[in-house]
Length: 193
Image (cartoon, rainbow, N blue to C red; front, side, top):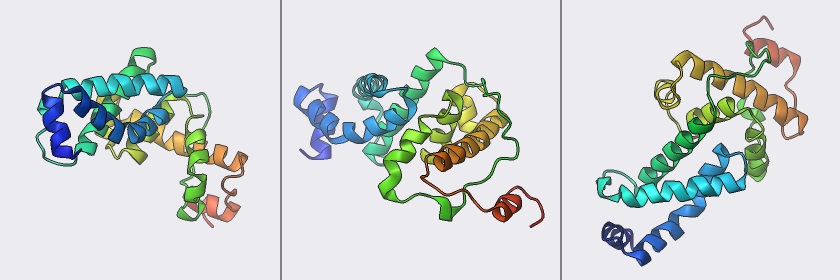
């Protein structure tokens, strides 16, 4: 079924069109939900809730961009709303990461390790994981993230910085990336090399 036929059918609440749309986009959107969720069951719940919103809001889609992008945005907002119901995002972990290290490009794991990296991201505290997903993966600016999560923009920035540092530590501990040489660390921290 073409995208146009799916859209027309979904606007008429046609079950087969809705099933086709869900079948086409749900695997990728489950991946989005999984990055925000605590476990697979929560991710599946977020996905279902998100698609209910997609179908009820389909009349708002204006063909001004990719349908997948529009659906993704609804799914991301559904995940955020779900998380907001259960946890405050201004909570921070009591670990000192003020001088966090930026993950260098040569430290980025190969695509073969992508699943391991997602698992490591899921190990981050909720606030860190959420901001990292929204900023680094979904591409939202800190100002918009702050509005979505009801936090200060500076909190979004610091949560992102701390999330990167913590993620680097997890990736090193799991031997997905190598520990950077001390000289590189000092330069990354703004020190003398």
